[in-house]
Length: 603
Image (tube, rainbow, N blue to C red):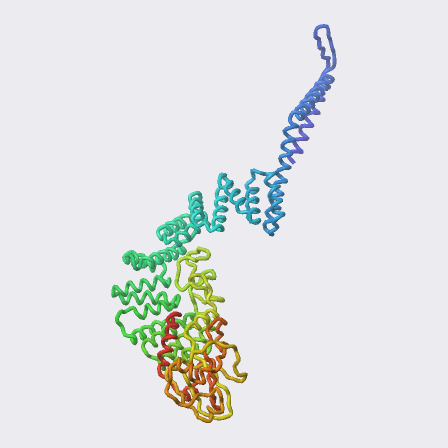
């Protein structure tokens, strides 16, 4: 509105000035040498205006001609820049959906059209990475690291390439350089912190953690927890080398993170050694309420040195009673009671607390039941049956971080380098070992089958009811599989004392029958003289899944009574044991074989 009013005012002033000039009387005379011109005032003003307009027009034309080359250059540059931006945009989109050829073409166009554009360098580097050309990617990232505006981005790219090349030293050097340029760089601080923890440089890791707090990368709560984790790791490392520093570190750690299980266990140990029993118990109880763990139960049981097994059982029952029943860790309390009850020979109490879990037992419950059967009754058959159930039982909770399962707590994840990543939880699928390998049920079976296998005998059916006779199997060379089609394979424990007596009429009718009672001969004599030694040896590997390369045990067909119940897959039955008797040395041999297996698998 203001512009319209101003325009109308100017028009009015111009009209008023023209009317004034037209009203002026007289003529204007111009004399120059012999030239004389005369005109009126309005005509002179009109000619003066035409001349001024012509001068302005000519000046504009000359200026336009003078500036035309620069304008053309600027227009061409703008078009080139627009084409370069178009190539960069579509190149990044091609990288996003994984089109290697299209990304490479757009990268070449962007480098030709916009060589100094930071995004063109980024597109070139990422297209080289997508293509698998690491040398070209590193060259571009080095060029970016030399520029002021892309230095941090170039260092990040070089760090990633160093990680892909497994150059840990180069990667940490690049990350430390990035921290000097930008202390608030999250990826650099995370990388340096992980590398220093991996090297055991806990003082350097604590310095990085303090820098992260000062830069605002973490809040106060996270800082306290992570500092407690680092102090606990340092205390665990120095426990046997510098106990004073270890004690000081873990005491500070338990103040910062009172629910951290390793810190509570180590702090309780130090307090117990200092005869601060009550404080030691309080530390364990605080951590137990937040995260029930078997290490806490063990530390609570041994909080007072010199106590008997029954006193430890009472103390563990007190700790287990503090766990709310709605907690997932309620089972940890019951397992801790069972463990202490077995140590105290309170077998009825152990069975009582394990009873709710025996129908679908996890691995630790099955192994505790196996130990209970062995310790209470000396029943190696039932113990072995429970051990076999542990093979395919549900996994127990373990220290897990990013899919990696370890048998001990660690401050950082070995997969991602994340601090305080390990949690006490049940693994999803399989159990990776501390070295990163996977322990599945089949591997567990193979390890168990590595124990000395029981001897095998084959019972051939017969119509003549006779008493079963047992002889010690003589070693014989392996032969082809020609076992009787109706033979029933059973598993019999190794026997030292044997019975060689059998009815004479049976020995006469059945060719592979046992010879009449004679003095027990040695293995070599039996192989030469006994008719049993000439009996073919059969392959029997089906029930325990032995590999084809495993040694073949001697299988001796003997006469089987019709009412012989045989042996099931889980071990000798009670009826069969009553018929053949309990051989001497049986429990001793089983203890040596299965106890060794039990100790190896940490029952």
